[in-house]
Length: 364
Image 1: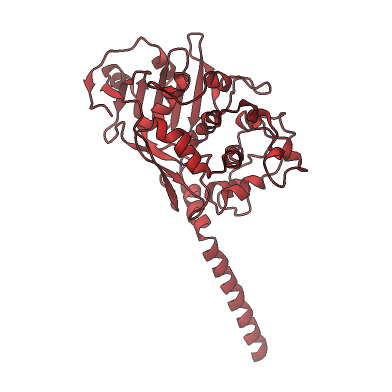
Image 2: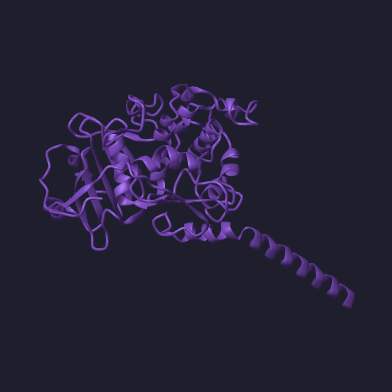
């Protein structure tokens, strides 16, 4: 009996030690996963773990921000900040107490909207329709190798988005949110529909695009994003999320950046790839982004397509608590940050007719 008790005690201790070791090895996953699980809106207020700065440059569009009394009169309790700007840098705004154009905002899903313009900076439009098997090792004989970057941007890859169970360490979706390896999770995401046949937004799509751009440029995705895009239109350093120290950047979410820089992204796209006098994207790149999917009309390359209400097409980048709307016909863009749904009159701010400057803040 004593021998059996000793044996059972040793077994329990070994199992406990193995469990503790596994928990410690995967602690970064569990630390983040709990934040996702506990988030009441579906997005954590802060995501722990390693990060990487994305440097800004000195070629950014100077914003002249003024408070607009008409916006103050219409802003609802859920609005934290609202900015409507044009290609010259004039921005009408309303800010809740504690917010300004310098407020650092977690863009959440807005980060995925960087993929299409960044692809355009590569200057090779043929990449959009080249199968991934041409670039991704191990996918040459895989059915997923038939997926094209255009299908990834159109959300027609056929890869599973699936329900989000953040505390399930075997879920590819949970691994894309919390690590420990974003690229491995994306590459192991299963094909659920033939490529090009089914619309489903999946974070693996943006992550695979980031891997493709690494293969094309021979440079890490964060460096490509910083050098080719962020440092050319942004005024302030951003902070990107990594899966582990010195690891891969999350391309599908979680870039913290100044509100003014999220608006600058919209203004650059609204003005056909120009930021002030500097051209960042080839001519026609934004028009290509606005090409509607044949399977899911109303969705372009990484952006939803909508009618402004005045018969003009706009690009919409949306995620929980954030909305960036872009009007190529007027050169205007609007950023809304808040809780709940954005105000129904948001698209009206894309029209050129708006109130004149009120109380100006210092230009950025």
